[in-house]
Length: 268
Image: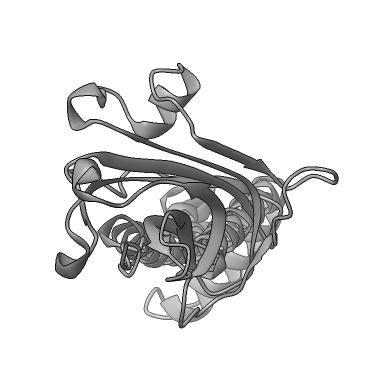
């Protein structure tokens, strides 16, 4: 069969999440800036409203025997006096502002890290089945490509073929494999002593990696059947992921297989 994993799994969902993360980041930065400005200006707005402020101005004019139009000096002296009088409250307010700013920076950094993981991680896709040797046309494989930016480490490959009427109408491929509603004709582990499995899928792959060969006669009897599978893998950040596929077999000269509805929608 021909390529069935030529598409990319990095689709609208990841782009949408990346856009939302960028918008939220900008909004939070703006909110933090506004809060810091309000915190800085708050003493200038509050202190002149305090009774002691007017009392200070009155005492200043009385003791200095100056004219009331000498307001700049009076306001400055009384404002500084207000800062000194309420230094404890102002210090507490500044401390809260610094704590809020620090917390916001930590949140933004965490979001940037999560976003970076999504953008930079591996995205493995399976497809097929593919004949890799025309001398043995009954031996076919799953093909795997990595559409991500970094290495993916394959841990387990599961695949199967069944008649379309036997393929579950509800549930995802991963759920139906877990609940044993889908039979497997190949189960390959990346463990010593089991089937030899190259566990690295490099990024920006120009050609698929062929895995899990099995016997399946690709003749007219198989046309219309459903080929499905699940790949478990980890990325360079140590996070575990999986992807699945479900493809309908069609004649080889027409492409070999075609995606069913939601073919690549079941993944993490």
